[in-house]
Amino acid sequence: MTQPGRPTISLGLKPDAPPPEIPCRRSGHLRRWAGRVYAGYLVLRTALLALSVLATSIVVTSLVGGLIESATTRLALGLGAAVVLPLVVRWRLRLVVSRRLQHRPRLGGVWFLVACNALTLLVLCLGFSDATGRAMRRRGDWFLGEADGWLPRRYRRSLATASGWMERFDLPPEAKVIAEAALPQDPPRPVYQEGKPLPPEQPTPLVAWFHPLLGPRAAPPNSATRFGAPRPGVRPRECELGHCGIDLVQREGSPVFAVLDGVVVQAVRNEAAGGIAGRFIRLSHKEGAAFTSYIHLRDLRSDLRVGTKVRGGEVIGTLGRTGCRQSGAHLHFALAVKHGGGVRYIDPEPLVAGWRLPTLAPGPLVAEGEPRGVGDVGRSSAPSSPSTPAPIILTSEEPEDLRPHRGAPEGREQAQIPTTVDVDEGI
Ligand SMILES: [Zn+2]
Image (cartoon, rainbow, N blue to C red; front, side, top):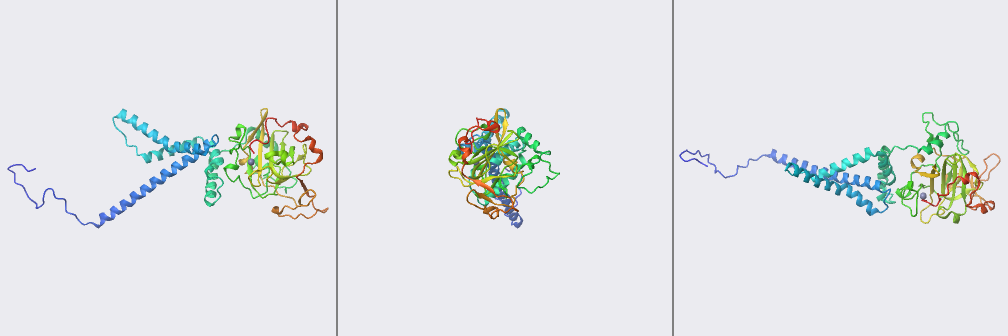
């Protein structure tokens, strides 16, 4: 506005006219770069949001998966913790701050969600690393089902690494007793193992045990085959939703080995009598301090009966699918330790990973009456000669002298099996 009586100096420009456009190639270049940086920021923000929501959902669904079987409920809880909970917290926080300071804070929604999820993951993965690691190992891939493509395999490998960092696996006190008893005074001297001294730099009791199958070593393939997976019926509490062991997959007919010195407390050759367990064998170790079960066997070694002593690393039968309704051939392996007046199942997966692989001595595995080689272990079924070890005879039929005693308590070892534990549970 001009004041009256004061001369105005005109520069030849209209007062409201826009400033002249000065051509500048540099500013256009900068604008393009600014656009790219902003687009990159948006992509990063979206990726961080998706990643944090996904990671939190997987961790939370894995943790609640030990108690909740329904996939829909698990998913709802996972998304609730990753999305709904942070949004509710944000809404409440804004309300409180605006009341106290008379100012409504902005609290950017996306970054708030990312920060909340990062905090949740930090608390669960660092504060409760053992429980979270265990849950991730057992159920971190639950949403994949039995998918077995390249991507699921990569995901499961990453999951195993991540849960391995978090989970600190310690032997339960009951299992420590038998593990410590096995070393160093009484290391197992297996019949079918070429004696290899335990490396002095690894005096861990785990290597005193044997893997129940020949190599290559393989973990349970998916969440349905791991410890605690959903199974119908009444189940011991420590087995979470039901599966009281692990399912290890190898070719049908592969030899199955005793994992430690023990005594046979149950040997069921009659498939019908075994029910959903089919043919199975159960061993007692260290005078009933622990029990191992080998279920769904195709054949059992012919000389095994209640009271027979076996050494760690001995062949006790062959892998099969007896008692299985739908699944293929696999070994259901269970480990239980004496606990109070009964037994308590423990997850054998971390233990099995540390056990040494057994080897077969030369000599055939043959079915009684009809010689039958085990092709998958690369051995001929030639008849034995005085210079070669005697063949391991396998049978599917129960010997006559055992039939009247089936299912009845027999001997001192049999009496030690708690009656509250049924072998049909959680298979
Ligand atoms: Zn099983």
